[in-house]
Length: 307
Image (cartoon, rainbow, N blue to C red; front, side):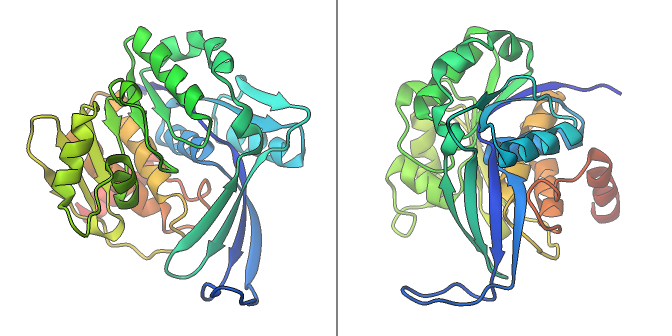
């Protein structure tokens, strides 16, 4: 079957997930219901999601030489993600994400660990991997200078770049000008543009971000769906799929990977958005970001059943 090549440059974390019935208020101690140690990191999640959809996926990142690092590499390998270009560091621990998960939402604190030491020269040594990719997929859980250098290399080879700007921070316009597709959520687009969505329309924020350089802004709105706009085009809206929600942790990563896959396979942006919403919807019906990522066959079956 025809496939595509996606290079994912980003983070690998061990997710320490604590399930609670509600979040504690300041200064309060409550009892949790469960604890789980789950392979995660936005980069690794997106790599697994792309691979499960059928992409030939290569992960570029860093882990520590510890038990968490070994577990993360094993998870990627089991999901058919290429791990040959992941840096293993001797003196720095693997990144960790502490996730407090209630029935309605989640709170996440990330300690970067080895992710924070993935340097631009590490990416420069892997130019050949980027040169062979159809799409380069990036996030912001690695140093910004490394993301910036990755976009420079990708553009040198004429590659399409997708940036999931999480966790949000102000980005230099020269970086944004190299990005083809940027996928913020509501809070991230506020951070990127400085516009408060309680005072400005979402379209005004989308236009402000487009003016900074990207060709397309695709804004994910959770249960409200997705809006997207091309520079000079009309804003379009697609509703979310209604599914039983188990764990929203990997929803954004599933959508980002889906968009990379469907675009790399030659589909229009509209088709890619529609299909990626289904990828994201199926991902939240299972516990664990990587374990919840659906296969292409599961997405196609869902489309047949639900239109």
